[in-house]
Image (cartoon, rainbow, N blue to C red; front, side, top):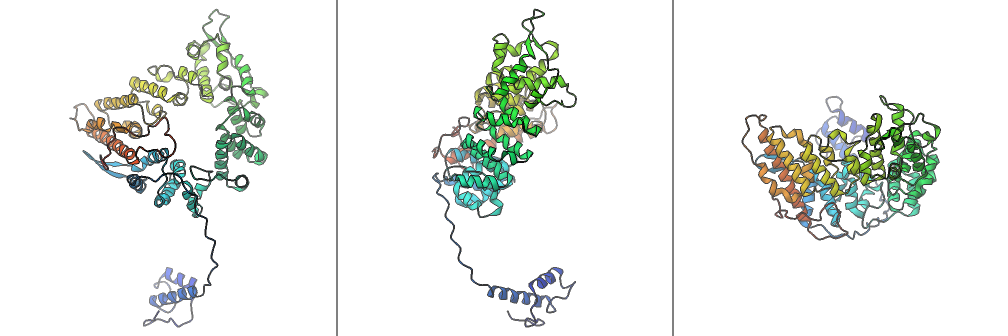
Length: 555
């Protein structure tokens, strides 16, 4: 570069660090090399050319092996455009038009879109894989579906960029992914980061439960207590009687939390030795009242002490604040006993009949709560249904968490019970039970929820009191119902006794609901009906019948 007036490009060269420092400080604070800003730039140009000219050609690197082929079919063009739009709006608000200007968070539709693509057996568009990896990096709730969708090409890219290394911390995800060799598994298990080891153990356990257990056993004695606890939790997947010897040994672990988790897992196996020991203890705690002649009443006698055997079997001796010790021990013993034993022990009664029996001395709440935990652990649908009782019954009579009990029931029974609950109690306590239902909601459940929302609108309240239910409805209602629900978005007359502006806010809320349902219907239509790999999940239809196939409809 030529030197202009006042420059001294021919003067002694300044080091690159000196040039950078002078440029950062500015000419006002320090005289730059050469005496002027222009001279500084000239010297920087000379230094750059000198540095580049002094480089020696590097040896050619070995070209990386290409990614493994992905056997899945390509996405339809309309679905690719939809994915690109959703990725560009993820975490932001997309604009939708209607009676009012609505703001829809289109990024919330990404999980459903990814699930649809996986169910229909499509592979990810190569140009969008980087954006998908960035989205999964920012949102952990997307990772499972994204990693299954991007396939071997996505993993190939993740190996070449540090920001995407999280994608390598799991085993094979889907079609085209090559399972790790035994040597690679062993190397990752012994040398990997904790997150990588957890993901590896979970993946191996999912493919081969025995191999996962043996992998964990190989280093169990050298693991930290907090790590043993996390690793032990991975045994929930594929839990069987084959895991009993390992879990029995874990009952003697030096960590109380590890012992407690091992006991919980063993109690989920009704035929385990721990479950049998707990059954004997529970037999001494709950019996029919024969002394007073009331054979139709249960008598509860909690343990008087927490002996060493109980402690080894996971019973925590110290109760929480405000809880009696004997009540605390009773719940832990009964919730770990096999539910099948109660019928034979208490007069061959069914679970519903046992739950209906009166319980002496106000022990009913503790007894039913422990049975509820046992039903969840042992995945016993008959007991769960009995403890849930009638959906029209008092809300506070259901022991434990109703959502946990509902998760044990089949999908149809779950939806039927929740529909009855919403129909009887409205939406005030509906959010937690609605979240347990399969998506999309059944027609009956969806209608009950919409009816309850209309009742809330007519009562004159504001819609944001039900924002959680409205959000669930946007994601869980059958999108084929959009046209049927469109009249709800009409702006009604404002009742005199309603909250100011409530009718307009409700109109906006229903308009947003209808717009979201139409977008979801478009997503299904854009995917097409052809299935490229495997059947869809039983709880979600392969396509939404009646969806408006017109691109952009409802936006």
